[in-house]
Image (cartoon, rainbow, N blue to C red; front, side, top):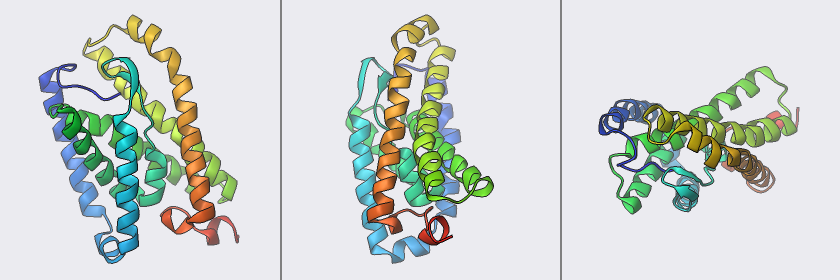
Length: 220
C-alpha cells in the first residue's frame, strides 16, 4: 500500500504537501498539549503505540509496488488518542517509513492515504455513533472498533486505487484482477484486529482509550 516516488506524477506528489501540512498544522493547534505533556504515562503509551504501528506499516505483502496490504491499526490508535494526536502520530510514522524506504517525494501522499484519511474516517464514525446511537459497550466495540476498522481500511484502499487509476500508474483491469479480489480478505482482518485490541484495552487498560469511559458505556 505504500506509494513510491516513481509511481505517481511528481506534481501530484508535490501538491499533496499543500493538503497534508495544513491538516497537520491544525492537528498541532487542536492537540491537548497541556494535558498530554503533564501525563508521563500517556506519553509512554503514545510512543509505544506509534512504534507498534510503524512495524505494522513496514511489513507489507503484495505483488507490485503499492498493490499490497499491511495492517493499518489506525482505528484503535484514534480511539486511544483522539483525532489531533492520532493525526500527528500517523504523520510521524509516515516520516519514519520514508526514512526506511527513501521515498521522500511520496511522504505527503502516503501520510494522507494511509494515515490522515483513515484517522478522519475512524473519528468521524466514532462521533456519529456517539451522537446518534445508544452508548452501550457492545455498540462501542462492534461499531466504533470492528466495523470502523473495516471502513477505515476500505477508505484507504479506495483512495489508493483511485490515485493509481486516475494517474494511469496501473490499468483498472489489472487492479480489478490482481488487487481488488483480495480487498475483502484484508478489510475483515483489519476490523478484527482493531476490535480485539479495543476489547483488550477496555478490559485491561480502559484509561488508555480517550474515547471510552466506564461511566458512560457500563454504569448507565
